[in-house]
Image (cartoon, rainbow over all chains, first blue to last red; front, side, top):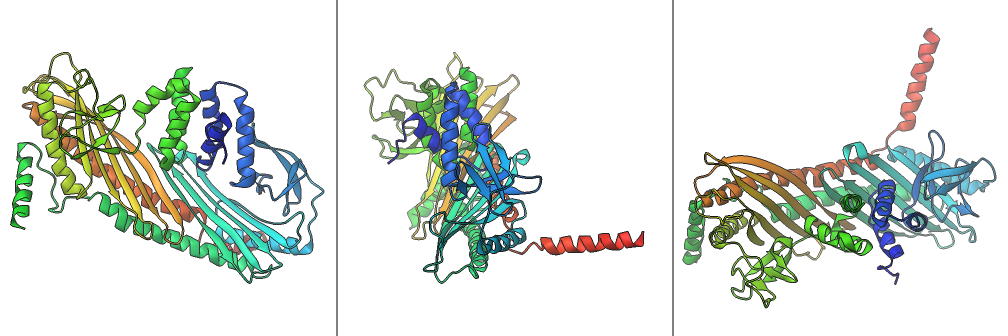
Length: 271
Length: 279
């Protein structure tokens, strides 16, 4: 178990509970509360670990293209982009991309072809700021990772949303595992969050049918998610508090409110 | 500096996963213990239910009916777990307590009509030097709490609603009073149908209304109708934010229909080429 009461542990847990697009305000708030410059390093390191391992970070690499930061596309001290053939680093304190390098990224033909298919798929389904990429495992050539991240950040209207899917294909046994996670945050005069996700496990998958499989899995997930909204609205929400009392009229406040009680007692007395 | 730290803490709590608000509140108090008292009294968390030792009825707990680790029951006016110096702990003055009992009876009926279950508790406290009397000319303040839970079904469909309405009654001359209200609803919904889905959070609204009064008990009636209106409005906003807004944000994140971006681009280029040829 990780230590959750230490400074580092508390900051880590706050970072994990933070909604999409909130790294900058989060960092600023924690620094203000701790009032201590050393906290910068702790926050930066916690942010880095979070983005490498759980919440892959979408970053802007060129005027129109994004990249992803994850432990899977880390090579030496830098991250690389298999589509744009770029290497780059990220400053987790200043929250910006640094040291973009234009050479040194080479992929085999299979990964290149897969990346193009994912790029096409992402283009067809993700309207906002997004990136999809395929990465071959550094040690086991049978393992391929696919990561898709899409963000819709709209602080002007107090909402942010994020979609992330992660897949691991084992070409050796045709197993596909992974997880889709969706987070939405709405915070005008309140704080409302949707956190949802689903683990994936499929068999008989190869590099030829993987993108089609992902497309179907993600369609199904999204349809089921939208259906759950309807169910939560129709069942839970409506059963918590009525829009109007059963007699469809507002409450008669004041001394006469006791007549409701008399009516109730009379009704109970009849039973 | 401490003011800034307090504001930064509130900003964090406005962002961090609202489902874990109690944990995050505790963590902030650990980071900066000096802020603890102010934070605990100004951040709304899901209400705890406790049993009244004298009447056996359940009641709701918040910072306004707390003394140390004990909470005053609105049904018996006594603190539980029992405290040694019950007389020293805060209680409303005599006539205000009569009004508090009337308000508890009234909101108990309101709860039954709108919630068809759940719990309600109302707490009043004095705000002026002079004791509240039946004329209604002396102001006071209070909080109305409502809670309903739906236990998770076998598909994991659960839900919980907490309403916290803090108000102030400010009587003016000529039989008019101002009612200032700050209302928060904490709504938590979840399902494990096909996926783990948590839809949770809180919305807060402030409202102020001037109404006629003839006696102290007409304040209770006025508070009732102001809260009834505000809660209905909040319910509509929750419906809009939780269901319509969140769903549309998901639609903007990923489209089930293919976007045909390439096709659009090809068509745009074709038109451009045609236009160039016409030049």
